Length: 613
Ligand code: G6P
Image (tube, rainbow, N blue to C red; front, side, top):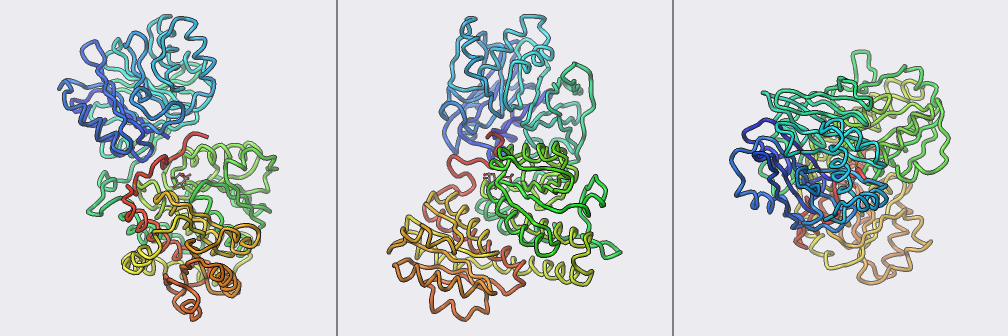
């Protein structure tokens, strides 16, 4: 998780690093810190003030020398060691000549630390990261070459890392490397930059280079040299940055979550745009394999985490229904460690907003190694998953900053449904007319979503009526079930209230024991054969004293007589309804979180991109 940034050769290097850290806060905000070269010494500052760590760091940098041109910065999401200033990065070596920042986890840190202590190194922090800076201090004694010493240091490490180093003894140079965790670099006007991801460098470069595993980067003013594990110079792949730095600003909204909820119509429209070519065929994005491979598929496995997993659950219905393919959906961290059988006839789809979540990334690598065709659905062009997969499909939702996903989940559902249609087309399980009709229906969604995001009054009234409760159950069936899971996740993420998403049919197998007056049940009732069953389940919880909120379609005549509160969505085809039903639940979570005074963009303990297991 953690965000990293580095700059070499710019007069405004400190401002650039601090500005980058502000944009990287979504990767973690337990602490923040910087280290710069300063006339043969290191100048370093750190702050650990919870969600205002970057702000506090900026304040402590008020006395910075005006001459800083080479330095690194870090925002931390704590794994090993409390979120205190002592554990904040950059970490320094014994001689305070090296400053090091890290994103990831060093799995063998305990044994390395013991060995380093035996050699006389003194540790200041409780982090796994600090072993690296002491290892590097030792390795530098061999020949003083920072690149070679970094490469040797990697040889001692197990785990995941993107690491960057500044040295007081190597003027005008930064060195960085990675394994598993992402690292990008870029250059513009003689200034070289490194970062954990694109937001770090937005507005500074228009093209970034993705660094491969175990490669080491030597950054100097006007030059970036990448070498592989053997020390040979290699050329990294480049990706164009199409986002402008304005997309990383709030644009007049109170917070990023509100802005991103309002951007949902556009996110859906962009994901749907130009998907049907002149021959009437569905267009995916970069598919680097033969279509024949897709025709041979007899099973689909979708993997993802958090909200992306929920989007996958909606996608399952579409693939099974339209393409007639048995489809499993698994949480990536579980999928990785079971004995799943791979092979060329299984299509594995990794769903991830960031394209970097470690469990999803490793799951698709494993699937590919096993011979399966792998497609990554990501919001970030050139993200690690899109490079590891055989094909990539993009959600085109634009940068999402708020930790709780909103617009990207809706766009993921659309992308999965388009992929399902492509599979149906290739397998001949749906006619061209049927596919066209479904796509037409999907195109109606941006206008409906715009109507929903523009109307918050009713949601606020409902929030005011229920927000004193401590316990919430979200129930749904069929396509309403993933919506219930997503609604519960949104509420717990940003309001810190206990919220459980459950298939309504499972109610009687446990959760009903917890239903009593004071508990809120939020039911997602989509039209169709499941509606009546949902109403039976609603009657069961009402009979036990629960307060009931129902998300129902406009034509639902029953709902007013059974619910305490109703949130309406327009009538659409069932496969399109989850996209609409998720919107009032996002708004409900937002309204409740705000009433509790929570910073919705930066909920405690969470990070947007989870790059540690
Ligand atoms: C974190 C975020 C969630 C997100 C999940 C998966 O938990 O807070 O909003 O759904 O990671 O992230 P991904 O980038 O793989 O979609």
